[in-house]
Amino acid sequence: MALSPQWLDELKSRITLSTLIQRDVKLQRAGREWKACCPFHNEATPSFYVNDQKGFYHCFGCQAHGSAIDWMIEQRGLQFMDAVKELAAEAGMDVPAPDPRAAERAEKRASLHDVMEAAQNWFVARLQSDEGVGARRYLERRGMSQRMIEHFGFGYAPDDKQGIKKALSQFDEKMLVEAGLLIEVEDKIPYARFRGRLMLPIQDARGRVIAFGGRILESRDGVAKYLNSPDTPLFDKGRNLYNLHRAGPASRKTDRVIAVEGYMDVIALAQAGFEDAVAPMGTALTEHQVELLWRMADKPVLCFDGDAAGKRAAMRAAERTLPLLRPGHSLQIVQLPAGLDPDDLIKESGPKAMEKLLAEPKSLLDLVWEHEQAAQPLNSPEDKAGLKARLMDHVDTIEHPDIKSLYRRELLDRYGNFAFPKRDFQKGGFQRGAPFGKPQIQRAPPEVASRLRRAAGGAFRDMLTQAVLNGLLRHPSEIHRHADALLSLTKSDAQIAPAVDFLLDNANTLEAGGELPISAQDILPPPPDKARFSFLMEGHDPGAAREDLAEAVSLLVERPALDAAIAAATQRFDTDPEGAFAEQQRLRKRKLEIDVRLGQMARKRAAEQAEENYPSDGGEPETGEQETD
Image 1: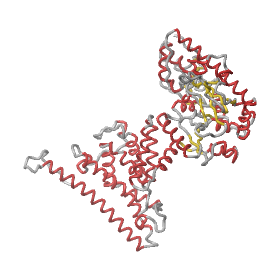
Image 2: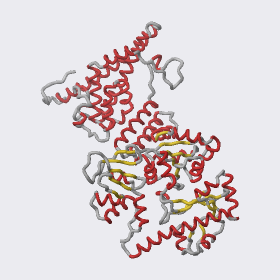
Image 3: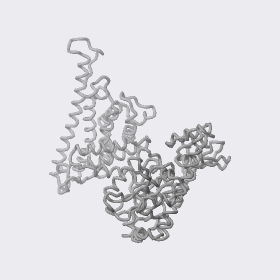
Image 4: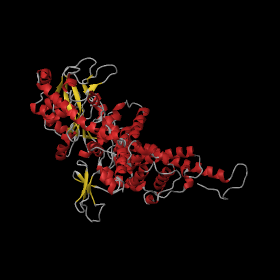
């Protein structure tokens, strides 16, 4: 089977070498590369390096060196074609069929590069001719320097349906169609795709022209402002980035790469000194393009316009990236002021304004939170519950388990602070005169808080905490339902934070029934007397158990808040004895109600146990003993 060098280069460019090698070898970051102890010989210190930008690995000890294909052969023991087929399947490429025509097609693909190079030269010549006067004036109005015009290879496609066909008559008409330069319509003569447009070449990582983008000089109804080449044997718009071959070397100096919305944004940034910018090809950022960005920087910066379309584009990129997240790799987002693109901002405020924005990007998590919080009104409990559901939908798309757990924890924490703002218990919950919806929290002095913590650590408090934590272990499907309450509880009782973290992080893997993994037996406390709580008992009605568990969680969370409020009221006796006493009595009454309710839960369970032991039909008790409260 004949595989052309061009096809093999394309295959290697679609594979992230460090990702491939990390499946077998634990790599560590080393600047712009990765390092590890060499898998090909025994060594104590790392001398094996992987370079994604250059697409090879190298060991300075044993001199092992190669590409992704070499790795599959040397490390996996595959034959050459087997290695190629496995990598091609991963890259979404079809291996050329084993027939005599394969070599012919490979040769044709190579000759398409000649077609594109000839077309580029013709477009550049047209720009400098009398036909290109309007295009040159447009570039002048945009403030484009001659150096930038030449650097990015601007050209012009005349408004002539047969112009390029005549100019490239040395090539077969079918090749011009295959290259995307001519449009072929049944029963009509093929005609030029690009007419009356300012032209920009799109190049691959090696700097070869593989496609074109064309912009109209004046807006016209029904005519697209930008027009790109279609997908061809050379060009796949979802697997390439505009300006990649220039931005790659620049990003190695800045340790940054900026992804903007369009070609002209890239060029405006380059003219202002930001040479590490790329752009997708008029589509939402794809998974493969994210991988290309990660080859240049661990946290690429997405810089989108400040209008609604720019915000939607940023969120689409986030949704594509969340499933791909891995340790150390994410996205950063910069959103420009409303109504401005990079060119506008730089002309209005100068390069320093852009540099300032790039220095203060928001995280991917910030983007998800802010987008969903602003997506719909949040005026009712149902609206707020919808916000939580949307946030968790995003979290569920993340494949890496540790990152998924951390995103869930952080977003639930933000949601809890938003949906359940802290209140103090003065005068009905808010300080007099405080703005509605913004509670003023009064914290107890340190010595009072210490006394309260000691009181809260009594036997009854410990028993309820143990019961709730073990109840959630027995009913893991309820953990996320009570995540907000649990997170707020850790703020008043730091000792249970490890147990809460364990439950939240493992909610999806725990099995109903309360079996605790051996690795976590020192994290959760032992269960209290199971007879006092229905949600700890075997064979109890699941629905009733979940209701009792929900009430127990609520009571558990409310108790420390009441204790803190009572302490705060006590501190006010010197300045407001009557008001402090009345507040203290009200809070103690509520605390007593909680204790009574817990007692009722225990008596209810005792009565159920008695009914089980002494059935109403007069039968013999099952155990011979009656449980008492």
